[in-house]
Amino acid sequence: MGNQLPYDATMMPTELKRNISEVDRRIRAAEEAAGRPAGCVSLLAVSKTKPSELVRQAHGLGLRAFGENYAQEMAEKAAALADLPLSWHFIGPIQSNKTSVIAEVSDWVHSVDRLKIARRLSEQRPDGKGPLNVLVQVKTSDEDSKSGVEPDAAPDLIAAISELPGLALRGLMTIPAPATSQAAQSEPFRQLKVLMDHLSHSVPQLDTLSMGMSGDLEAAVGEGASIVRIGTDIFGARYN
Ligand SMILES: *Cc1c(COP(=O)(O)O)cnc(C)c1O
Image 1 (cartoon, rainbow, N blue to C red):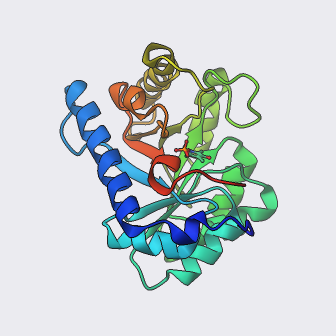
Image 2 (cartoon, rainbow, N blue to C red):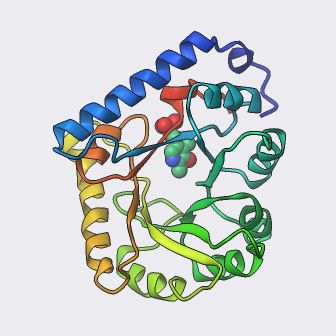
């Protein structure tokens, strides 16, 4: 935030509405192309860097779930929009000194990749809020990425996290390296699906695959995504 370009404030409600309809249309078309049931993929609107007023407008247009990368920014928006029935998904890298705010504010966390962080989230989840839904972030094609557990190490991490009382382990997430063809985009998503199917033998509650962004949602839905995380194609480009 703190960026002075006026685009966010002036994004026209008609433009936001058109963007949301177009993303919905793409998701439905991809479900149909893959022979998956209509409506089986849910849309997470990634609102990072965008003002809470824009999130309020998006709620008015039917969106309920919003994704954020920075703990403090998520907490501020959740407070500003506390009158609305929204669900907040934390999708960014997690520093240990931010786990308490993440555990308090989030309904879901997609980016758990270390046991230490999972333990803190579990301990710091407020009583009465119910277990925090978590996904384990797995490194697929992007070898340079600092985030995500290596696929080989995922089974042990998943087994340990599944024991934590404050967390409800729900599935896996990945952010592949950018690729242009749909075939190349599909490969890491297929790998994540295979890994989850494998893990489901020992951890049967896994039911969620968070994969697909603005540029590759069709490939992700084709390989079994249950949540796609869309920022740019809903709220426009980010300038910071
Ligand atoms: C920013 C971000 C997104 C959204 O990316 P777009 O390309 O703008 O749709 C999705 N997932 C994560 C983890 C992100 O950080």
